Every structure is written in structure tokens, then in C-alpha cells.
Length: 313
Image (cartoon, rainbow, N blue to C red):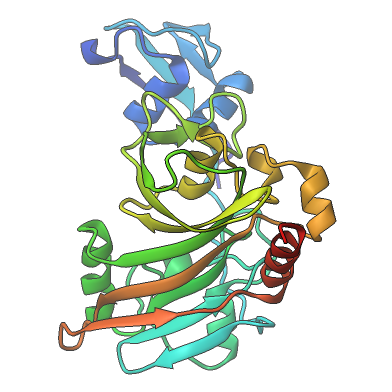
């Protein structure tokens, strides 16, 4: 097999005039912005034959050349039991599970922990074969550090219809979040685009060029140092609630990635953000009837909430 790297080159369209190299690479070659920046940093990108950094600007008609990365190793699904994962509904079309904290929805490069898919496989469940090989049956996700309800498609019909419901914003996704301080107003809507953080690849942020993102919140209970919110997502961007609440200056308690107070997190015994998917409603793929499921708080979140409530008495 040849080890000569594949090199591709394309002329920059006039419509990308003035764009950064990483943004142009992402648009022209289908890379993520993160991968495009990595290639530029490794010296694998050039403009008209001269090496180009990720932040350089491109010009219409210039030739952008890139040494293509080697094909990624296929991600394997490992059948491994998931401690604490509860299956609360099971029929011919769907499974509804309560995902514990520390578990990913599906395998991904670099993730070596347990997954919802792997846990279901270990338990003998057969799920839809639709979707990418490593995420078959998965129609939506929760962060590794977020617990709560997920629906998984078992049939091909369910996969198609549930994906359409998520796309069309028919699904009712509700979360409870304990946030620092007291939002003003106590109920409201945060409408701010979310995209990759400009400095940190592992984070997301409110950015001018991000995707439209809408979060509705209502106060459930106010405490001396925090507020318990009911949150409804209109869109489903990665880290959306965490990013929006942080940008609103009320990060989720325990969410050190997005600016939460570490002293408060330690005092409450939290090692993750206080965020739980408490309710999930959708039209059942079999008959179109509306179904809803609910989940109580896991022990670590309940303990933190009880402590905050006691401190306010």
C-alpha cells in the first residue's frame, strides 16, 4: 500500500474572500474547524505554494492546497454494561433510558469510557441500524457530564420519524438546572447563536457566526446563592444550556468549564454541572400518539440541592 500522502488543491471561491484559512478549509474540504486548524499548525496547508497558518486570510482565485489526513480508524462499539443506566420504557420501536453521568451516548474518537449504545448491546437489545455505524439508533445526545432521559430508536421507522421530530422541534425536551445567583428576569428566553469557542477547541460559546440557539427558562425555586430552573430547549446545540446560562452570567452550579465557582462546587460535593434531563415528550412512531417520560434527580444532584436549600433556611 502506498504511503505517499494525498494532496488536494482547489481555487478559493470569490465568496470566501477574506475568510481565515481554517474557515475556508472547513467550507471547501468538509473538515471541522478544529481539524482544519490542526492541519495548518502541522504545516500541511499552503496558499499558492507558500505555507499558511490557520488565521491567515484567503483571497478569491488563490490555490488552497492541503495534505489530507490519513483515514481515521473505524470507531468500534464495545458491548459493556453501564452501571446505573435505567431503562424505563421498552417497546417494538423505542427505548427510553436514564443516562447516568460519565457515560457517552455513543463511541467517538478518543473516548474510552462506557456508552449508551454499548450498554444496550451488553444487555442484549437490538436497535436501529440507521445512522453512522458508531451511533446507530441514537437520535439525540446528552453531554457526558449531564444525566437524564434519552430516547433510542429500535426500529428503522422510529429512527426516521424521531430524527424528523427533533429536526422540526416537535420533541419537548425539559431540563432542570441549578444555576448560580438569580436570573433577571426570573423567567425568560435566551436567543443567542452558539458555535465553537474561538480559543478553546473543547468549549463552545456565544459567537456571531454560531448556529441559531434558543433556550427558554422558568424559575422553580430561589435560594440564597442559587436558583433552580426549568429549561426548555427550542434548539439542541452542543453544550447549549451550559453556554447560554454562562453567557447570561448564571453558570450551572459545578460547571467549572463554563465559569462556575469551584469553591461552591467543592462545598456541595459536585464533580460535574448540576443539570439533568427531567422530562421527554414526543409523538410515538407507531401511532403518532403523544407520550411523555420523567426522571427524578440522581443522588449527587439531590444532595447538592438539599444542601443549598438548607443553607437558605
